[in-house]
Length: 245
Image (cartoon, rainbow, N blue to C red; front, top):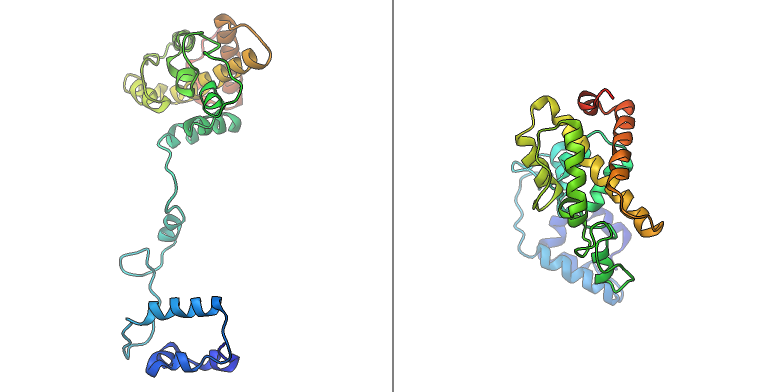
C-alpha cells in the first residue's frame, strides 16, 4: 500500500513521472489492490500532461460547463420513457387513478393474460364479454362491453370524440379523439379518458372477487356518479360538460 503521507503529498503528475506510482507501493498488496492498480494504470497510461493548470470539465455539456439543467437530464439517462405521461400526469384525476393508469401503461396490471403467462390461476376469457383472453388493452379499449360503456359515457357528456375501436393504446385513442374535440372540451376529454378505464377496472374486479355479474347500466350509473364527484372535487373540465340533471 502507499503510505498515508505520500498519498497526501503526491500529485498525479509526480506519480506518472518516471513510474513513481509503482515505487510508492510498499508491502504486499492483495488481489483487490492489484486489480485496482492495474485498472488505474490502464486509465492513465495514455494521458498526456501539460503545463496548463488543472480544471474541472462537466461531461454532460458540450462546453464542459456544469448547469443544473444538464445535471437534471443526466439523472434520467437510461430511464424508460412513458409516452402517455402527458395524459396521465397532466389531467385532473385522483392520485390513485393516475397511478393505476401508470401501471396500465407499463402493462403491470394483473389481468388474465399475465396470470396465464406465469402459470397462475385465471379465467380463460374476459369476464365482461366472455369472448377473448383479458389483456389490459382489451379491457380498456377493445372489449365489446367496454366499447359500449365508452359510447354511453361520451354520449351522456355530449363529447364529439369517437369511442375507442382498434387503437393500440389509450394514448392513441385520446390523440385521435382530441382531433375532433373543441379546445374548450379537451380538459373534460382528458379526465374522461382516465375515469372510464378506472371504473371499468373496478367493475371488473367486482366480477372477479365478488362474483358480481357484469352490468352495463350499473357501470354507467357509477361512472356518472363518480364524474359528479370529480367535478365537485376540482375537475373543472367535467364541470363544463356535465348535464344539469
